[in-house]
Image (cartoon, rainbow, N blue to C red; front, top):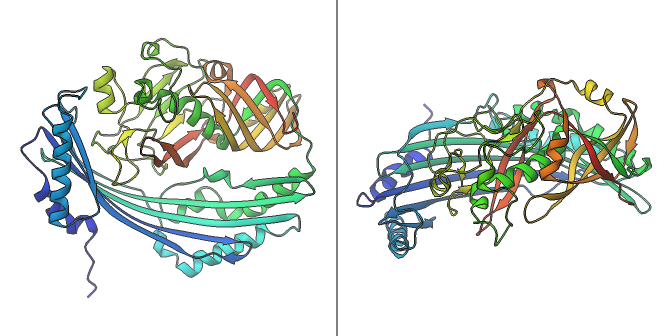
Length: 484
């Protein structure tokens, strides 16, 4: 008979319940238990296997109008009691300085589990390494490839949120992040091509690799890196740009996601990551994009990187339009920011681990599909560039003026792709760029991807965000190459 080892949540839950104070306005304990594996084969050589385990809790206490946090990885009764005492101290210390007099939080009950078709552990470690070695050999097959690597990251994150009013939310996340990279060189010309620049990631098991075509992509990545060596530089001028889904990831993230964060709109991020051009009075009337632009916040998408059932304050996840037919309708603000601003928001209070409090973060921020096929979008372009896979980004402190670059460009002339161009870049202003959206790909061109490491907050929090998008076509965009 095989005995099943109890999970960390099962072992610790009674102790966490005992530690929760009941004599305050609101208290919660959020447990985070993480195990991760990092595998990399670089230039056909296996790099040291890395495994990470990390477990701890965040205690939050609202009382007397004040709010206090305390985090600890000492999960003994004494360690938990000390964290509760520290959170009480800070709640008392801030009682006469708080913006809110009462906690705008509830006591939810529910659970969420990442959809897994094929367990990660069903593939042995030896087989995972063999897969990466196969990909590495395909990546390094040309003598002009000077550096290459194939990698896999797997993260299992289990969380438990308990509240003083009987709330209990248990969530079990399973993340997979595949990676391929090939760097080619000839003289002073160096070009790198990757497998989506890390955007091809999601929730699930081994099936995530097939979802993005990981096993079939190494040869293409290597061939395109070499192809870029001989490609002409991207032309300079004002023209149409067609952004592939893996370029749209950063466009959405930087020029829609961050500007719409409600805590940023309220001024919380100005000291660290800047402000935003978006103001509270814009919601409900501001023309953010053309009437083809529809953007949703949707943590309910199955298998996307930032899907969940509840945010880290316990608000249930629902799909909400942020931009509808081009009009700005809703900010990315969780319960606390909503109360501060007197505005409706979304369930996006998120923390990257047990030792950080939740703040307003993107989750799955997606551009909804349109009606055009990729072929129709290309055919409508007289002269332009098709941008694939972001590799550089810069945006000003108000998240307005931006400049982005891609790994791989294709010149479009008279409705046809006529060749490859290297070092493609473009610049624009968020407040006008999206109004020049003139074509949105249909559902067949949508890919649900993500950004594994979005940074925000003091102390910094690096967290995964999801972005699904079809290919999108924009007019009157300033395009330039590396020699401009």
